[in-house]
Length: 387
Image (tube, rainbow, N blue to C red; front, side, top):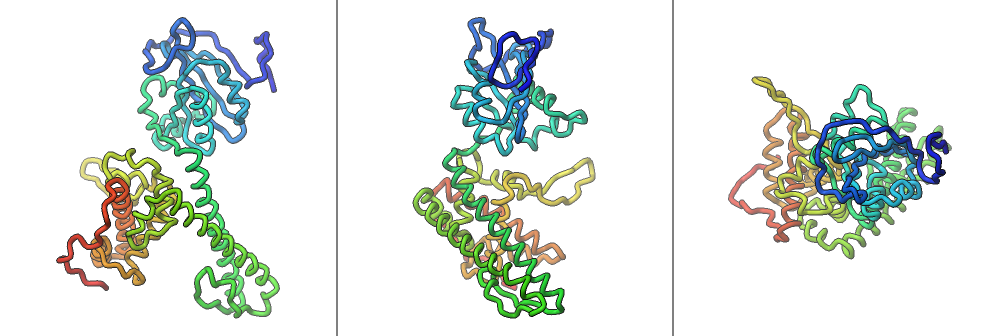
């Protein structure tokens, strides 16, 4: 590791480049403990990378840069960087490493702000964007007003490990889907088609053309193995939902919401009290329409797709079931969605599914917070024809 030539003492920690103090604006940083006996406070911005992370430390009182440098994104180097510092405010963007690093820094007594990367346009739209500039921008925003970062809260380490099971299952499902599509494509190349069937029973198909049989049989073996792996994950999900998160049983009162969707909902939102109103869950999960209104121009746009893509996909899948023919539970939500479908238009069904998914997200939060018993038909007098 390269060392600064100006430093006389050796250090086993991250590389540091100290800068001369320069005059800057005077702004009083609030809510941070003093670094030394002089009452000085420090604010740090850390631009996290997969291998290396850049940091910038500034004075909270004047905004002067104290030090800049780079360190490996490893626990031992982060501990060495913090060293014997007193409590300081550390800002970083949400990402792959922000969860465990934020928990580590909090354990070392630091105040941590995890910025919502989608909200910090000053960083991602900067025409001169680089890691050093990003770290300094994070530090200055955290010094002036932390709300500019739209800070988020990470779930606990235990909840993250439970959510990893769901993510792993999703990866296996995607792999199986890709293999099934590959098999069907190879068979189509011979002029034939495989019959429709569920993914679980696909590996049992017998109508394989002899010309591609040698290529396809190993793929069917892999599909069969992936199906068994998915079944094991399903048992793990069901066990977690029943034993660790009993509130999921309450959410499963709604037809179309099973252990997987309910557990993903709880683990993703994590804290029900983070929303003052249940209606805020829809925009949080990106299920509301984007807006670009100016004067008389107000175009109709698609949904924002903000928030967690995996949970949004599960809610849309549940909405498909609620509106589908296999759902035997009549409900206000189903009737409302079917009325939207009847409006016509080539995208009527798609819009209805997204609208039902949004209402479902709001309803799940309401049941979670209030603990009420779900009443499918609160307006039984409304008559709706089912197409």
